[in-house]
Length: 552
Image (cartoon, rainbow, N blue to C red; front, side, top):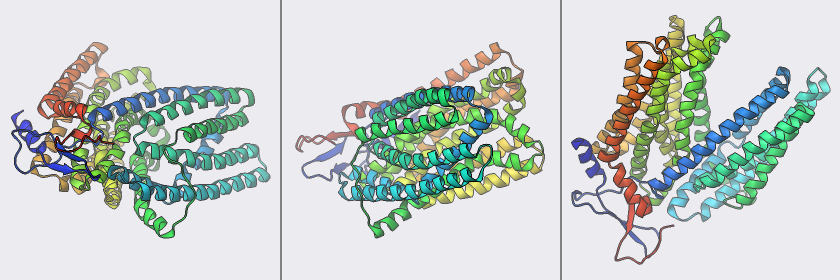
């Protein structure tokens, strides 16, 4: 406790900061124990309490949408034949590819806009949004036209399902244009931290999809599903036009477009490689094992659990991502953004430690009884879950790299980690270690990715005391809770225990997790940070000698 308190005192040292606008001076809250060399508090510009509220809002909306999406999936599968559902799933694959058509210009424009929000001057960045809107529209129209043409060609070729494929591709072409417009506005809303609006849009879109697609499919089958999907997208379009953060206009600037591609291209490519990285274990199971379909089916239960854990961590990263760029824009100092990302990593680790540990001790006894045919695929949980926790813990560091215009480093780390994952999975499968070996190799690659990302981002910006805090808080947040779960699993495999023992293990893990959270809350400065940010966003208080001007 004493060591943690000393680190906190060092990190909460004070310095005077002048705001970019005339007549506004801000300083950090003074502490008697602070050393002479001071630095800015590691807090978002809008404060930790606002962050917590945004996270709760986004999490609640996301969970509600997942329930609605599950209900929609069940309804559609009740109303459509497997062949019709297969056509629909195949057509939807082409919708995601529309995101790559603009070569990352929209991502670069939004990144610049978020930084400009922190600076308080968005005029020039707004022109970048207009340019991105123009490129988005033109490229999506071209992509949509290609899909419509492909659908027409398939429709003329004949075949049992030719008409269904033709209509499906034509629909996806229209959705590509409308969807890019809606998605771009959602990204801008998130950059402005308008999470209430984006959460409301998610709920509206989910409800409209369930009602319109369900009724239309019940009445007209697969063609009705096409029409219902288009109608639901139009509902989202109307909503986002009424609640949009900015009004976008047509614009063109060749040099700016090339510069934005240079910024956004690596971000887009890194996201593509990250998707491959997270799905490499599935691909290699399919490529190496003779009974690959059965093995992947067993392994899918473990993937189902870890996907939920990753989704939980991603909810927090959604609300944190714009805050790094905003912090960087406000102070112009990468180290301030790095300190904020380091604190956010603590939040990710502490939030995910409990559900991860419970997944280890309860996953096998619960899912093994619910899905006895998949029991074989539950053993890898004990390996893969800790790896996914480290993968989630790497999100703040990778998002920080994008915020401070070092996205090429983010791309390099994920490429190296993907190579390590491929090598590890090859050795595991070629050596006959089966699904356990795949899970272990994948978890080790996730750990390597975490270490690489932290090394090229936060580690080089933090001083010695901040590095000690970073490592110490991660060890505190994850070590006792997840370590206890793994230890209990190896003492007696969870597949062999009854409900009473499983429940007692869950209670023990909850007690340990609460103890670690209490230590962090009282000993690592989190209570003081929330109290400070309750009075003034971002951990600042007004200088008494300065005019009484409010922060934006």
